[in-house]
Structures are given as structure tokens and as C-alpha cells.
Image (cartoon, rainbow, N blue to C red):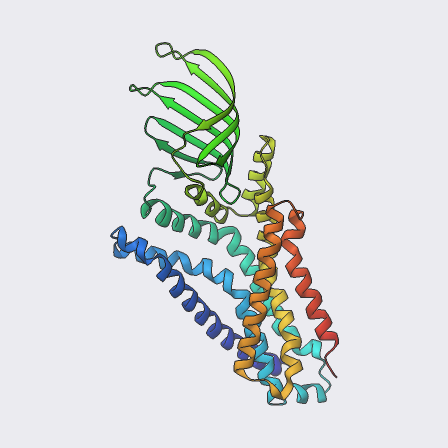
Length: 360
């Protein structure tokens, strides 16, 4: 049985490496050509290209690994089924569970590896990519990213945004600091909520503090309603904050959720992202398990083209479902836990059902 395990693992690892390399190259090529105009327009040097490729590969790896595992499982077991080696193993009294055990064990190890990458490596890579693409090669060089807030300078003002939602065209926790020519603060404006309407940012409530230009002490405070804010940015300009979630691991997201909710802001997005940090690595295990019945049901009719096409179809279906339930989670239509785990649960049930219907 040890020889059979090594035979299965050797075939699985060889195909997995080929699939992973192919998917990374295709993904990287398409992604690079989408961004090449930005590199050319801003006269990027060779170091910028190297930084982009070096930091993109780990991020792409965690995205394509579940699909690569699914394709590998279908091709590996499909190949053994086509040559009747699976039939020979089972004729010798080896159960299906013992046949797939080494492959699923390796898939579990890869899932744990993905969890570690998400926690320790991917945040650093994402931070480097965000700096390169959104600050160094962007026209909005003044916009600065922090882990929790978005800061940028507009003329004699410094503007802080706690939470930006470009899709809903809404901002939470807007603070505007206005300075005089001697860089002394003369005004501070705070709004808990602002919405983009008819080409302008509208704040339903605004607290305005005015400071004495000589002493710097507070001289006046007013509460205003339905005020137009001059933020000098459109909703799309705040989309850079969406990329910040990739810079945070699970523990940092949990801390951010506590901070935002403690300050009275809506942290639904961050809660969904936090759950996704745990659900995403287990997708490898689900895809590996789902590939088993699809490979064994074809038997001697299995072929490479069919296996690749089937895997891509399943991968697209999973991506669509996961994107849909995640969007429902962001919109508060689903609890964050359900939004992150629903796709895995549904595909796990599908795999169990298919496995139970495999003919002996």
C-alpha cells in the first residue's frame, strides 16, 4: 500500500505543479496587460515591473490553488480510472477511502499552508502592490493609506475617512481639518455619514468647530444639517480603501471590527472579510473532495480535455456563487458567517451526494 500511496502522490504532485504554473502564468499575463497602460504612462522602471511580478505571484497563488487542486484531482483519478488501475486496486481489497486518503491529506496540508499565507505573507505582498499601483503609479499621490482610515490633502485641508463604500457611494466618519497659511488649524468639521448625490457629497449632519487664529483655542461650535462637502474626490477615488482589506489578516480584521463598531460605524464589510479569511483556505479541501466523484464517475471515458473543461466549469460556478453570497453579506441580506461559508457548504453537500451515487 505504501508503494501505491507514493504512486498516487507522485502523479498528483506532478499534475498539480503543472496546473498551478499554467494558471498563474495565464492569470498574471491577463492581469498585467490590464495594468500595463499605468506602467507606461508613469514611466515605470525595471524595479517597478519586478516588484509587481514578485508580489503578484503569492496573491494569485491563493486565488487559483482551489481550481488547480480540483483540476489535478479530476485528472489524477481520471487517469487511473481510464487505465483501470483504480479497478485493480479495489479488486485487491483496497477501499476507495484508502485510495483517496493520501490525496486528501495532501490537500489538507495545502489548505493549512494557504491559511498561513493569508495570515503572514499575503498582507505584506498586498501592501507592496497597493503602494506601487495606487500611490507610486497613480495620479492621486496625495492619498495616503493607513490600516484603518484613508487620509489625503486637498489644498489647505487634510481629510480623513473612516469607512468608504464606493459601491453604495457612502462615507462614514468624515473629518476635515482646515489650516491657515501658517499651518495653524482654524476649523474642524465632523460628519458621521455622507452620501454622494447629484455630483456632490451631502452630509445630513455636520459638527463644525472654529478655532482662534492667535491662541488656537476653540472659539465656536455649530451643528449644521444637510451640508454639501467639498471633498474633491468622486466615489471611485475611494475604491483604493477596498484594497486595504487584503493587507489585513484575520486578527487585524477582528481588531478593526471592534474599533469601528466601538466608534459607532458599520463594520459589516469587515466582518464578511474576516470570515472569508477562514473560509477561503478550506475551499482547497472542498474542491479536492468534489473532484473525486467527478473523476470516478467517468471511468474509462475520462480524458484530459473533459477533465480540464469540467474543472473550469465547476470553478466558474463556485466563483459566481461565492461572489453572489458575499455581495449579499455586504448588503446585510445574509449574516457574515453565512455569506462566507455558504458556497463551501453547498459544494460540500454536492460532493457528498455525488460520492454516494458512485457505482460500486
